[in-house]
Image 1: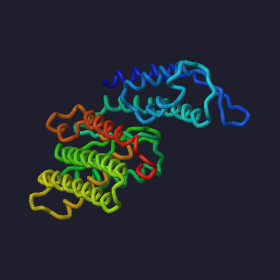
Image 2: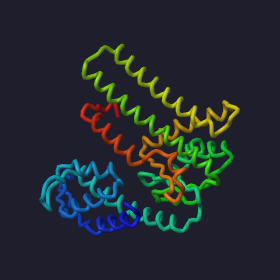
Image 3: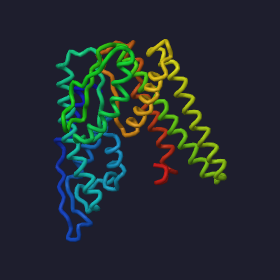
Image 4: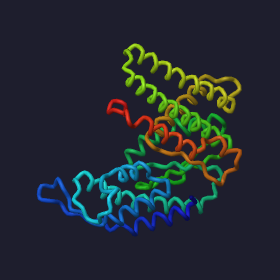
Length: 300
């Protein structure tokens, strides 16, 4: 779905919001109306493939599968709905701003970073430290540099421009390695849950976990061996260490649902260094579906 289509779906969804609620005397229940339009709005937003976690939570709510426009729902469900509507209105504004900015910028090598929630200044302070490790230092190691060209409070987009193709290419490879590592981590959870269902001994469970961790480490090492060729032919240990740190940091940011999307304006030879976002998302969703039935609070 292109930018114009996304904006169209967001506008349709926002115009459908007619949700109203009134608390009962004990505030444990709310009388609500506008659920018919809310269901339609959620379905429109689902077409954009954005906000999937929030949308999936609403679709799993008891009111969503019904047909009534008016119902009594719990205070938790009422809060979930009102927070979702506020979020969509704010997010829609951020997406509009991003698309307008993208059409205006003349930067050639651009990375778009999607933040799933509104970020405060303190959140940005923490994020900036991670991005320094994950983006700025690796870019410098290949003779390039990066700079933020858009980062406004309340926006869900952070836009970073790179000075050279080598700089953004190495970042793409780091993101690709981190994505592979996260998929292996998800697979590891499946094995761990399966082992629990078999009621294996603690020693056997620990052996499975250690084997999975070793596999992840080996995958990362193999990928980094290939990626570090772009950094330094002298096999600089410090630079390789920074590369590994960048992969670990990006992995953590990806697990927080932060997305890294290369500008489609760039050539295929650069974009191919990045993971296929659509394929990765589909694979991770399928893996999560397998994990979910047996997932406990300890596993999350």
